[in-house]
Image (cartoon, rainbow, N blue to C red):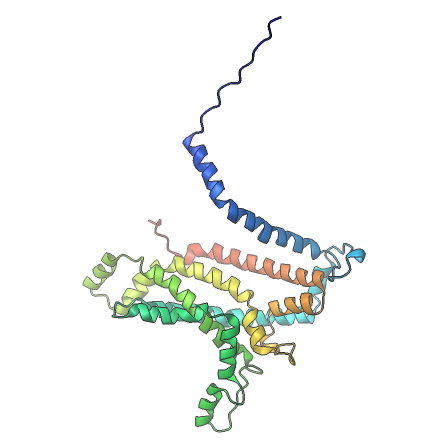
Length: 312
């Protein structure tokens, strides 16, 4: 009895769009796998832990507590204190950082001999590790033998300002600004160098001076860059931890002064010092929610002050 021979249909050739899609996912797969394993999974796992009584050791006594950790944060004076201090930190640091970064970018955008050397020097502090940066500044700001107090004492003998104690908000702000304005300068500089030379020359022919050039041409064109800087600076300021922690604590001082007791320092202490993992992660998720809300607000306001090239 003859058997029916079935031949498979010829496979359809891969189209160009399918090949491009396959190559795209192939190239991004290393980043995608890392993003899922190192970002999405830890965030999800942390959210689950924040709903439990986990303290790092009670695996056999672990139970679900729901929103108890989150409700407790609104009655915790330590959380309220650190949140208020963080708001002050953001309000103080973000505007100054934006202005100084933009000012440095204007200086670095000048067409003078050796400007590349100056740009490198301006950017150099941004790549110095936090530990080296903090220890250098601690020598400068020391109450007893610091260079800054020595200079002040030359004009006002006996003056010893506690730059890392009662005035730590200003001392640590100086460290953070010195460390961060180089990176902000680079981004502003890239935006300035994208401004067409023809536009600048036309404005000069019309009689515009340097201030009018900056105010009426450079600044409006830079608003998308400013918007980006505001978003990134806002997120970074709320997450600030390493510089204030290293600058104001030591083996004998476990808690920073209240004026620089930032939110992330409290999160660190709750999780790694006190051992309240669930509660600490709940505090951290509240901060994530606050950052998301503020970022959303900034995005909603951009249509009122950000000028796009696509606008008519």
